[in-house]
Length: 325
Image 1 (cartoon, rainbow, N blue to C red):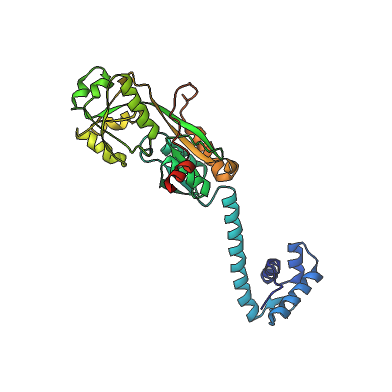
Image 2 (image 1 turned 135 degrees about the horizontal axis):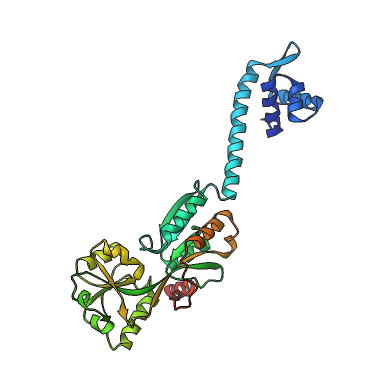
């Protein structure tokens, strides 16, 4: 078994094979000729074959030398490619990055703009998008299974950092044929008795709580008849007039192209925000740094204004203890 051979021996050998001269090879490699010749002799002894034979004032490869030279070139090319790939990954130019996202954010907010900005910065980095709730994103970030998260809540974990991307007022989404669409002004008490569908409470607990509290302040009760996980299915039920729902104003442009109407609700002062999240200790890594820079590039310019945002759900750790109990 060959034990002492190193990559430099292969590089020396390939250079000698190319120029067919120990002297010219030594000049190209910037080494002395005598040590170079001695290392090639050691290589031949270790392999147990002759790689060179004299020819005039120079040398040429033996049949064994030509065979070994071809393999040596392939080995060196593979090593160089591996080194370049490792550097590319370390520098954030290559590899794959996993991003968790909350259902529905692909159709609104800044997620698509963020991905496009990141793609411009790192065109050779592959992207994997994983649908996860905010709480699931935080767990995946701590475990290192995703590098970045995009969701409706800011994390409460000190190990995670975040940036607010969008802020949007909550309003009503309904079919244009719905009787509420004919009102000049919609109030929460007008909605009492109507079929309301929302995305699951476990995904948006504070949103559910705030809507119920806002209705009670107006002396009304919301009739939440169903919780639908899939946003597209929820919107389909609204489009056919089967129910109404609450969404952010940024969906109004899309609603106009899908037979739906977005309307503000008088007295409803709830803002929805979207956040990107990452592990604080990863902020200086090339890929996460590129994601953060991309997020800052596309985030809403109006976020300097003070307003109320939805705080996050309970810490996942506490929820896990209750489940075990």
